Image (tube, rainbow, N blue to C red):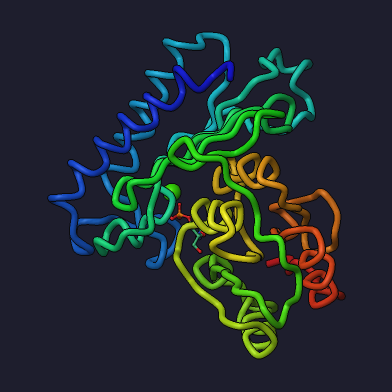
Length: 273
Ligand code: 2AM
Ligand code: CA
């Protein structure tokens, strides 16, 4: 694996910084971003800045796109014209900030590497869970060095799903995820809500969950988990079964279950608000 020797120690090291900084963090000490529901801490920024520095020193020509400090968007469009490198680090310094602030275990550092909008490598470190997920294109997906695979069975009635409500956090008015949550909760074995999309998708990759959907994620939420899932044998599409994810929603599952789940999102339209 081309990147693991450098990437995994960097991600593990910044996850240790996040763990150390967490000792002083309370809900009161966290700031807010676009809305009161959207929290940010000094650790989100510190971790992203350290990642920027470490990755730039190891790969000086690569672009960087992070949730807190921005950068060149990781898609293919316009890269050549704008003189951008093909490779972009797609970074969420702390995915699951609300869990982090509340001292719950489901948060992680997520770093993906994309080339012209396609994933090449991904590393997700969840220090409280003591788990590191890693994948490289064509090399398989791993958790703590052990090969992982999606769950082989494929029926909605036997499945355990997960979702998130970032649309509510973003204040969507016309459509929200509660409709799908109510419908699918009745049809499957159970729905979980862990609060970190990167970990949700990694759990599908490792067979601990059968499927995951969300309406309103950003590229940095799936920067690393996309490849972990794909290399574990999972399917990822938008909610129309096409490739415009996460903008048009995201649906993640093993192949058979994915096809069945997709039928429940027929007619989905992302609201304009
Ligand atoms: P975060 O913790 O980095 O903000 C929770 O449902 C999941 O959705 C988390 O991965 C969370 O990431 C993400 N999320 C919540 N609100 C979001 C928003 N407005 N934009 C992008 N991602 C969001
Ligand atoms: Ca984040």
